[in-house]
Length: 204
Image 1: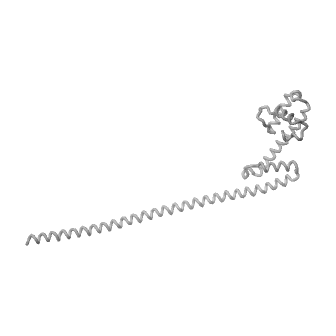
Image 2 (image 1 turned 135 degrees about the vertical axis):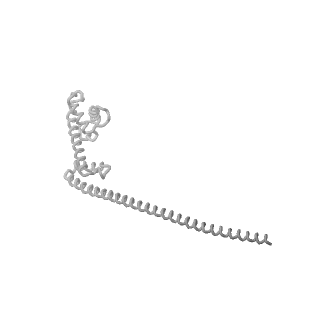
């Protein structure tokens, strides 16, 4: 409503009165769609006296026309954004919308060129986004293959260590058995020598 203030033969106070009458739910805001709905009900059930003055009727009609234009602009802009696939690559459309509305109002002959420019830009952005996604997928696959290779090498290394450990234990076990047998043989030999000495001594 404040946007309409310079264009209407009303004081800001009168404009606020119109807003209060239409803002039936008292939430402090009116969308173009809400305005059209409430204005229709307003026109059907409220008399000229209820709106303070019959002179406000042309103003309400002017506001309704402006609201209808705003609703049409919203629809066309939303349709354009859907067609260009903007929502997939752009989080905030406010700057684009502001420029589009300005051109539509002040330089409508440039609007088609601007829309073609947007189509090219967002097409390139979409291509870049697709390439980024493909690259991410390729890197994920490469990383998974690398992890798998590392895991394979790790398992091979574990097997090799286990094998060498078993061989080391086996080798030392054999060596220990051989040493034990050799030591046992020496002990028996010494025992025999000692026994022989004892026998010789007894004979003497």
